[in-house]
Amino acid sequence: MRDTPLELTLGPVLFYWSRERYEAFYREAADWPVDTVTLGESVCSRRRDMKLDDWLGLGRELAQAGKRVVLASQTLIESEADLRDLRKLCDNGDFLVEANDQSALQGLIERGLPFVGGAALNLYNRQAIAVLERAGMQAWQAPVEMSREALSTLLEDCRAQGVESPCEVFAHGHLPLAWSSRCFTARRHRRPKDRCGFVCQDYPEGLALRSQEGQEVFTLNGIQTLSGACQDLRHELPAMQAMGVAAARLSPRAAGMAEIVAAYDAARRGEPPAPDPLRLVDASLCDGYWHGGAGMARRTEEASSC
Image (cartoon, rainbow, N blue to C red; front, side, top):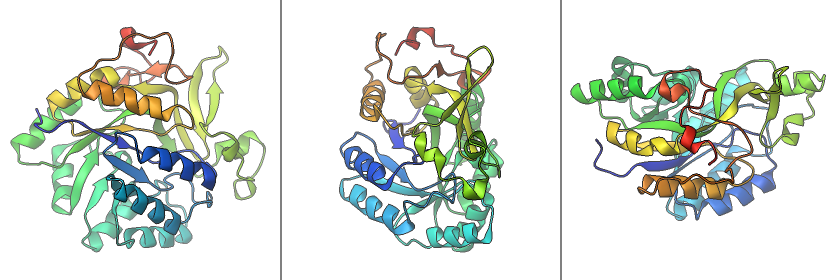
């Protein structure tokens, strides 16, 4: 069990918002009880409202407010232009970079820079974590589909072999599942990807994809596919602390994020969430992967109304 309290991380905004919305969101986030804020566009290079200098400016403001700031790299690199932007990100000179693909990983290691290992790197074993730790990895994120039992075993193995990089778990939000060179939001509007009209900005929390029975199976977010249900592991924070997890990641939403952060802050301080008829999010909840089952399942029934 870790001696230090479980930290809260605010992940990068996965959806496409306007510059004004980003700025307003992070002005509020400066006062939230989160320890680390991860900034940047990790999904699609065509989302250009915010440039690197804009993210750096927000990062400096958040750092002045006492937050640890990390810049997220793009998860799917598709062109030389993407690589040029990635090189600039790696050379930002101010903040750690979260490597979300092998291109970022290679660039950061070649520069001798410390980095954070993103969940998309798929770190499933102690040997891989040890190799990256020696290369400069300061922390790593567990794959979103990894179960509590598998992660506990992995963390025990790491400790036994002296591998000490802190681990972070995706605790709240629509789970990032897959990325594609095809933009599904543009396809929904019968537009080609390179002339999409930035329609994903019309969906600040993604576009729900429902089955014929009406169940929300996935959430479409441009080239990214997210879970339809929203991961909610508030009840699992004590278990995370006990097994040695260092941080719980909260994925930003367009509305109600302050309440979500407050609820997780209370839970990590030992104030378990009580059943409440008001939901934090207008979506079904899930924790199936954490319990070793289907990702869309909900096992923690007592939390289903939270």
